[in-house]
Length: 128
Image (tube, rainbow, N blue to C red; front, side, top):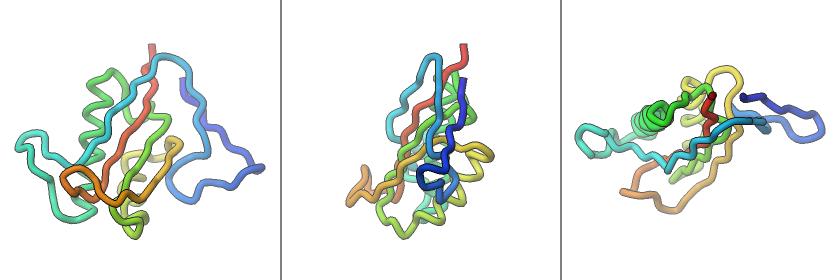
């Protein structure tokens, strides 16, 4: 079960995420996903747009393989090589998490694996 938590006693979300998500049931914790094409093993694209889409497709595949879905993701962490890409990644992220998005943190990392531009991890609920 997944329920969005909102309060006006704390700052509201400034992007496609929620302040908190309450969850019960079994949980699936993903490893960080980067923009590797699963077929070729190569980095998919040079731009933040291309890489963000591949990361989200990889995240979706892992979550579904674990018996859940993006609709049941309760928390994500986004690692960006450059925080200037935050708005662009938000736009793409919102396509994958429409409506009541998960809680989320976003941080700038000086270097990511294989020098990719973005990495994401998640926690999802598995409905039993």
